[in-house]
Length: 77
Image (cartoon, rainbow, N blue to C red; front, side, top):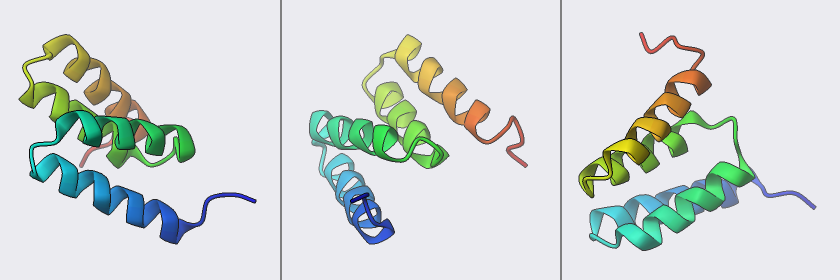
């Protein structure tokens, strides 16, 4: 049995809330799980890039932002 869209949505909202609360490690872990559960959702890679950037991990942020751009097919407009 796969993961439902509703479950992915709940997890995404929880990850966002964790990040907003400053619980970056918890948010990163949940977004990491989301990326593996739904690799076609570009937003998760974008969120991981934002967390890495906020923490000053520029190389990691660049990797995640590049992954997000690639996921979007290079078309961000």
